[in-house]
Length: 116
Image (cartoon, rainbow, N blue to C red):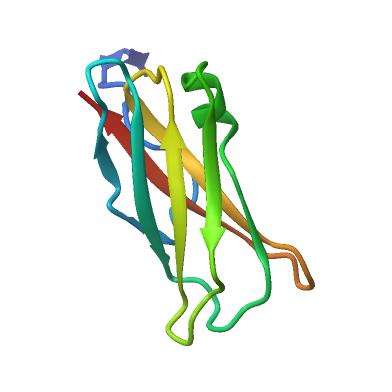
């Protein structure tokens, strides 16, 4: 890309507010583009109420279907376990948003990278 008459690299990575960590953040797809894993999100408010996961990018990247579902609640250290799965996915890095379903309705973002 040309910026001020100088050629500069175009960033190719996650864009957004990565204010929570997702472990594992890198998941290997099967030869057919499928994956199933439990993820741990850390950096959430301890013992916060119910939360909802969303990732429109992951949904679009997995035409065979995808799901992000919390397992249990956020623990006293601010960690949440969730099931993540997808079918017929393409490789890439996708933002995962976690939003509290009660006041103060905070939204947090982490990233999940799918690769072959």
